[in-house]
Image (cartoon, rainbow, N blue to C red; front, side):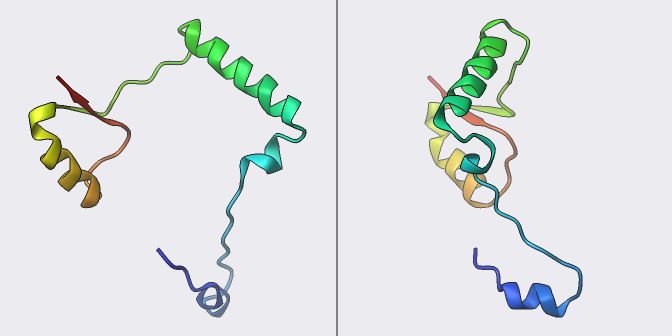
Length: 80
């Protein structure tokens, strides 16, 4: 997707931001501490995540159609 930033200025008070991990985790040691904390919470079961859709491997083509058509949210997982 290409966004014409000039059009944002023309329409008034619209703005665009593109944060990156480097803005929140500098130096690298801070990023590693954050990762350790996150994965510790995941391993402790305090943070969980379930796929929003599970499809059999035989339906891989359908999974691709859904992804390409922007018909999914969250993870789509293929299972044997």
